[in-house]
Image (tube, rainbow, N blue to C red; front, side, top):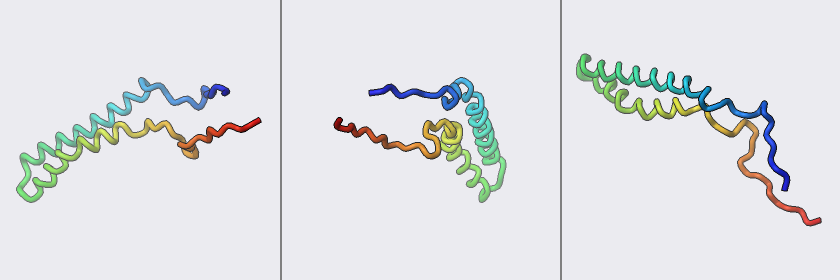
Length: 88
């Protein structure tokens, strides 16, 4: 069975090159969360609940947003590989 070869130009960037951008996205999301929490403390009652909801829900979305963009499949790639063997 022939080995699968990878072209260096199609290789993904190193994870260490990708991390600063992911950390920046997460940091910005957490600063928005902090602002929501502080706004919860100083705003009147009806609006306060929207800020509290944002402060509670934003960490979940912050992790998803920070981890997005590291997919291994490219458009047009297939998940299913044809591994049938032919009879010679």
